[in-house]
Length: 290
Image (cartoon, rainbow, N blue to C red; front, top):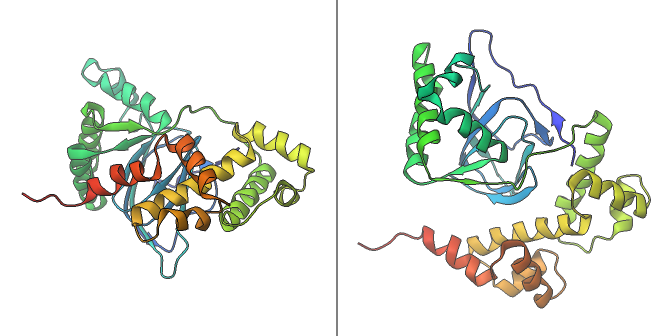
């Protein structure tokens, strides 16, 4: 999928951007920018696309995105849904290009290179960074720079970070292609529970079926069917973690036409069965007795 270039607004008196926002949702354009993005989700649930990865997101997630890594967050569609985030955007050399060449700062270029595939931050490092991000929102002058450098120190030194994508190469797009792919994506998110056929989605793209299949594979490096299955499985994962529906019900809620087919695709995408997924991601979050 070809992303759209986004210009991050930065005030002339600042070297980088810090925003604490509450809104009804995120932007709707698949995009990239030269700034790294540190994204702390205080409140919100839905599906995110980062590079070639499709995953659920929920409250408390902390992610570092590298320069020019395409991404989009889509909110869960429900009444009164809202999102609250703290986001820091910064160029690699925002603290001075000389900093990255200092022998004491050798870990920073390594961090920025790893971030090109996206990083999920966990554990104690996550808690420390979140606290500093809250402080950064109100900080002024030198305090802003000191806090950012402190955040980068934690991120560079901690082993508590996990990669998100398998690669970071992508095609840049023009506005027409961005619009077409956004229509395809919007249609899929709105109708993933239904029996979507290639004729329908090809018509959305104003292409014949054969041309559409070739086009989508070129843009996204996967077939449309693979993309649709990943979207369905990502929603199934969310339902499993919410633990309100039986697995057999989730199967049909997410657009699969039989349980065995659902289990096969779930195993292929997540490398786990639905029960194994629940044990790993649901039960580990429950409070433990002392």
